[in-house]
Image 1: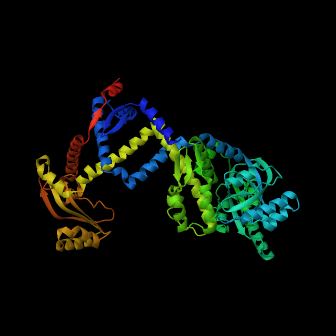
Image 2 (image 1 turned 120 degrees about the horizontal axis):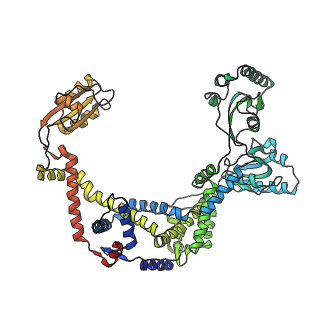
Length: 637
């Protein structure tokens, strides 16, 4: 939405949302006041009279005004916090639930099937299109029918696990492979060769295969005697003899499977778990293992069989039903929040397209092309930022939203002068950044619209902003001043000494808990030779880990250790486990507090209350408040 349109919307809203009060020149709309008043009322056991709440609300807004006057809203930490909250708050408004539901439905449909996966694969490197070009040529030859698929897979595929078998990976299940690969396997008709399929580190062509209903997952245990392909006849015979001997023993006593796996399996990871493996579905194991696991009944033990890893005996523990729609939904929601998953980019691109259309957004392709042309020859260097981030080059718009333009200089700020010398890497990284920047710019426009048009969003945002400012101002004006200024706290105590009385004697001194009597004696000797100013620090430094020392002021009956050591209470052990000795150093019994430290909690609270009252009075004198009584009557009604 263009800036003029946003202003018109805001003006229209303002006409419907009258001002209830003005605090230091800032208008407070009726909707914000009513929102906070209702929220406050719900949190009270007894409804608060409106007149009382008005006075409380005035102080609330006065403190916010004071925070702004102190420029707390310009702190980098506050700005960062608000930017994150604004984005988090806006996210549900921007989510395309219909698009996400379609992704869930698509994945759930695939999860009900297993698909035969046959592919030819090439590894790729960032920014390098060579592998794709090679695979494109291979595909053209295959489509023309001038070459055999199996021979081509053997000759060109980088997947060593399947290329000797015509690229056949066996049947696979959903939710296990990159989205683009999975989609091609499940949607390409049998016998048809797919277009080029790109994943983060590979490119593929897929031969469409058979489909069958999903068999879910299976939980198994196995015993392995390793014998890799290419083993000598002697090695093969030895492994076969060993697995047959183990099978004969298990056949005679099936309950011994777990113990036999633990003591004899060459798969040491699963052997420690009595041969148990994690549950798996179609395509997650080598085909021979998969075929046996799904062909026998729960509890059954297979005869020995060969895979490319060696000889196995498999016990099927139980079958597990396929994924529910709720399982698939949880899977998709995790994926769309993972920047490494293709669905993350798909959701982002879908969001960008919708928001750009909503706000009349247009990308200046010429401005982008000038930058990528430079990168293709030079990468991203210091001259790139000089040329496109400053002067006329920086002034050129890269995105427009109606009459509002975002300049190239604004775009380059987010790149933080990063240098990328390699042209291919530079273009690849810039393309990713460009997508993110366009999306962010579109989301910024939508957040402005939300603040102007959506009362709930605006009220929550204002509440969080004002609450954060109020908290920071209170920390500086009240809480830190009371807790971090010992001289002011002591002066307050002396001025109000009569307000702090005890009804029982207290002991002051140093309570020490020590590892044993020997350590305790060493600590006593050191404390006797050390001045009180550095005594605690010195003892802690010299006996770290072997003692605990605390300067205390404790009333009789409030601490069992102190009662035992000073007030003839019953014998107790040190509170810290493994410590055997404890003593009081320089104990003094006093009837009334001598200093603020003796009643620190109470004095600090009272001092904070005084500072709060003084701050409130200062605010009332400092900032004008004008209440619109006519509008306030609407709230009373």
